[in-house]
Structure formats: structure tokens, C-alpha cells
Length: 291
Image (cartoon, rainbow, N blue to C red; front, side):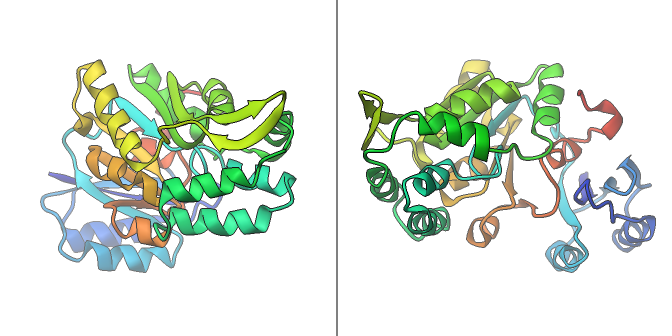
């Protein structure tokens, strides 16, 4: 048995009954279950539709995401999440670079690295090197003035943790930010890279080994083993090339507002919904969300 979930941005509830019923009839599904009127609905299916990606493409133009997955095991026990452009709406290193006067240059490197066009470790070292001489105090200012959370993050963590779930923030960014974001959103642990500083000034170097694609995959497997579960019982979410190994190993790997080259390699693609989409995909109705 499979489940087709249709959802859209909560701020723009364009999902209508006609669209849902049309898909149900075309695919011979069961009665539609509305998880959130105008925002999310799901349909039980007897088989995996052969034309699902064609339908997905058509719905994208309407601002609607479509995910088809196996019904069994949808509710996950572990959430493992990227931070930059996933749990928060910015790339922290780009914001720091802007403070150092090299924002546009660094942002271009970040974009290419996240698209998989550059080696992640080399790109990180180059970008961090451009921060040399920046006051460490800038980190606090950037966090306070520039960083905003992706909508739905607090509800996602609170709801999964209320059901006994565990949450880990695993980032190719920096502990100076993951520590703050993890505390604010309720993550149980966080892992990231360490920016070096001497006498309150960034040195332009980063701790090794650098946390990249392999480290994120290792974190998924290590945390799963520690919890006594398998990676199939985990939901991973990210947007960049360094998230792909983690996304493809987890039972549910969600490419959230991901780079096109990344999304193309993932079965679950959310381009319109926010982080609450990860709850709808597990079958949670809005009324079950924990504030």
C-alpha cells in the first residue's frame, strides 16, 4: 500500500477538493483524508503510479507538492536535519562574509558548492579564509540581526519529540550557530565545524576533520545505532549536495527547497511547503501538531 500526499505552502492554501478528487479518481485511490484543509491531504493507493513524476511536474505549476511513499513505517523516530537554508533561511557563512565585505563572492562559492560543482571541503576552507581578521563578536550580531528560522521548524521538532522522537542538527556550517539554533528549536544534539579564533578575532581557519557529506551520513548511522533503530526509521532533511548521502540513506530523505541538481536525485521533493510538510508526510494532521 502506498500513500500520496499533496501539500502546499501554509501561507498560500491553494489545494482544493477538485484537484485531490481528480487525482484520487485517476489513480484508483481510497477516500481523501484532509490533514489540513487547503494545505494538505493524502490518498491511499493500491500501487505506485507509473506516471507520478508527470503528475508531480504538472502540480508544481499550481504551487502544489506531491509525494508518493510506502504507507508502512511513515512515522519516524529520528529527525536528522541540515541547518543552513533548511532549519534557518540563510547561509551563515554568506552572512559573515557580508560583514567582512566579501558577501557576493562568497555567496557564489556557496551556491556552486551546494550544487555539487565544487569540492565541499576546499570550498569551505577558501570561504573561511576570507573571514580572517573578522571580530568574533560579529557572530552574535549576525545571529541576532540576520538569521531567521524556516517556518514550521518548532512544530516539527515538538511534535516528533512528543511522540518519542529524537532530533539531531548536523551541519556543514559552524558550531557557533548550530549551538544557538539547536537550543532555540529543541534539538537533542548538534554537530558542525568549528571556526578558529585567537584573542577574539577569526583566524581564517576551521577545525579538522571538516564535517561534510560523509560526516553527515556517518552521523545518521551512528545516531540510529545508538538509539537502537535503523536508518530506515529516520527522516533526513536538507537542500545541498553535501546532504545527498544522508538523504538517500534515510528511510525518508526530504529535499527541502533544494538546489535542482540535488532535488533531481531525491524521491521526496518539497518546493512549496515549509517544515510542517515533514509532519504531513508522516500522516500527522494539523490538529495533532504540538505548539
